[in-house]
Image (cartoon, rainbow, N blue to C red; front, top):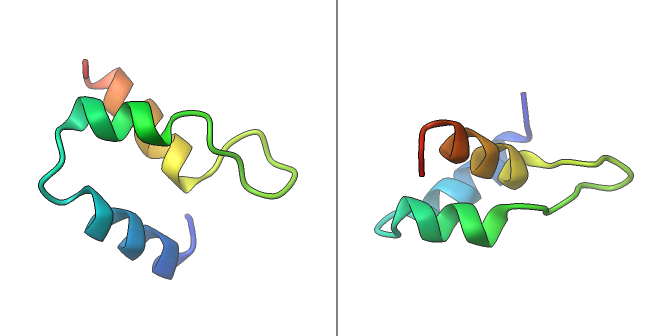
Length: 51
C-alpha cells in the first residue's frame, strides 16, 4: 500500500544486498508523523522471515 515510486526505489537499492544488511539499514525509518515507513515494513518482513 505504499508509494509506487518509493517501493521501486527501495527495490533497486536492495538488489544484490544481503537480506540482513537490508534489514539493519532500513529498520526504524519513519515516514512523516507515522511510526513506520515502507522501508521499515520491509525490514520487519525480513525479520519475520528469519533474517
